[in-house]
Length: 288
Image (cartoon, rainbow, N blue to C red):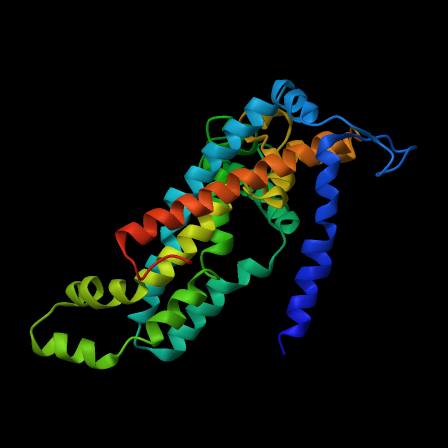
């Protein structure tokens, strides 16, 4: 049963790894991959001095921290709240409602946001006009001050509900006798959550946190590519969009590969560091 999964990773993850060599070559499309000149670390030196790389790296870190601080706890809170719902029909309705955005593409969501936030024809503009604010104009999609907040909020709306799946599954494994014993001892609802539910979720939270920290530099190409525009490049250009432009707009495949490899190495270090801290805090947590 494991063979299809193993084959998937071998074919699509391990065999293509020979392409990493492109980061150390001066790639010439006419000479081909193997005949291109080997230049060692020159691509990395060029990359780190290129215009826009520092900005993309900085934006990636900032947006990732925002996502980690504000988006990561939301599925945990939602899971706990859903677990406390006793009306099963209403609980299923809420679960289905918050799961649905996950299956909507960012292209469609960008269209929805434009329909709501457009400064000329958006819903907010129409509502403001209805209440007498005819000259109300606020282009959130082109605001450098608020665009990152828009990214975080839209990501929470889209992914937080689906993120509750693992947490709810973990909560379902907690022994219900613990809650009954806590009630007998006079524990309030918040005390039950603090002393039973959250400790039961601890291992799952730590493992998902390690994965999240490890993917900090994967800020979300599809989301930002669908939402950003030249007016907010300064605060929204990330490594993923930078690599995309290098590869598909400028055909600098060697530099794009070097940038991707740099990002992967940073992610590996973050995973190992976070796992090390988790093991120090709790030996039962972590990945290895």
